[in-house]
Length: 261
Length: 260
Ligand SMILES: Nc1ncnc2c1ncn2[C@@H]1O[C@H](COP(=O)(O)OP(=O)(O)OP(=O)(O)O)[C@@H](O)[C@H]1O
Ligand SMILES: [Mg+2]
Image 1 (cartoon, each protein chain N blue to C red):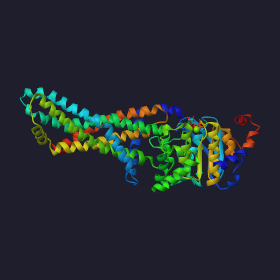
Image 2: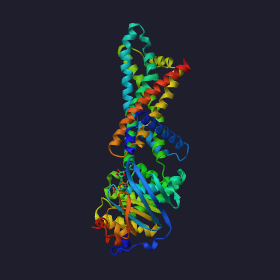
Image 3: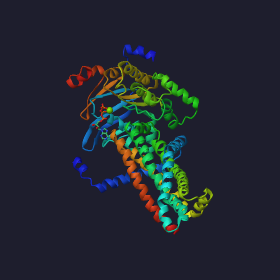
Image 4: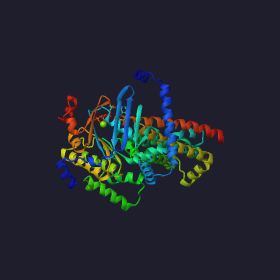
């Protein structure tokens, strides 16, 4: 953590981890709920090792767009490929394999509230990686908890945690599987500026350490500034702008610039 | 276009759709049941929770039913000079019908709604989605364990309720006549045969399954939004109770066909 904080003082992109291999590809995705069209025609690519930030106002379908990547929602039209395979054509087994490689941080944290923090973190280890050696479990749990700075909370129940702590435990639970792709749904919303910055740093650290590719949905411009290699802006069911933080900040469109104020 | 279509869905279509969903949920249950990776510790925890939660209520209610049934039947039997038949009557009614149905209805109210609310709130707070997306199996962990736990525990609760109901009957008999425990017990044992006990136990297994299945189905498939937790709990009680009566009618018919 310490070392990362140094980096942040002079924001330094981890672009060196970025490669040209495409891991996620959305092409002309359309999604409607009943008569309400949420995504009209959305295309994006995520390259290995890249941090892609999605901006957009509330209710524009940002969460819907990334839920398709893990097969939680099926698009009405268009193609959605992860690691080159069409998600809609996967059977149960392939989908399960995909899901172990893709981490999803829920907007709400989604901690299992009948389990303690330790049990929350052990759950994916015992169920997905089938690790049953208690020493190994303890080691992994402690490692990931200390990386989100919550070692003391290990035996607490989720109901005893603050909003920010829940989010960090949620993050830890996702990171513990060491996913190749991370999808962060508003990782810093509702947190104080200091914790927000810590989370953003952590995202950057993960990218460097494990070469994860990430899609980060956020309203927090500082988080976007720290983490992004590339940003895209979603509005009215379409992506209306794409570029680096510096490029979009100086965009000639008033609407795009308004995000940066 | 789509909006019009949504409003015009007739009730029978919705009903068919829901039935279809239930059938696929049921097949999902069986698929997971036999796919290995059974969650033993969660199953044991659920058995304990379900048994422990309803133990007192089922016990007290069954005991009181035994007392009341005896007190109310007595005058009629005395009129025919048949008061020695009292233990037999109480025993047969409790074992065949009152014990199983009362226990199952109480469990529909307590357990089915509890499961509906629990899974409903897990759905609303995206916990079920999170489990699924992490590659774990929420059907296996949440649904299979709960349905099996109710299927096992409700017959056991019923047996316990039966015993307490009979004991209540014994006390009530002794309020007016004197009858030793041994005599009462003998009369009971002689009056209840295999054809009373076996169908009763088999039907409680189905009641238990219905209680767990409906609770899980309603909770697991509830909509997003806080009010849907309440809806899930509520509709779980209603459906589970209706299913219990329906199964009871079916069980009576089958028993009649087979044994009489
Ligand atoms: N499962 C669903 N069923 C029906 N409608 C849905 C569903 N999921 C999302 N929607 C609708 O899709 C729209 C976009 O939702 P989404 O959650 O993607 O917004 P968002 O861009 O993530 O907003 P926020 O920043 O507030 O999280 C909303 O109007 C929502 O009502
Ligand atoms: Mg969202």
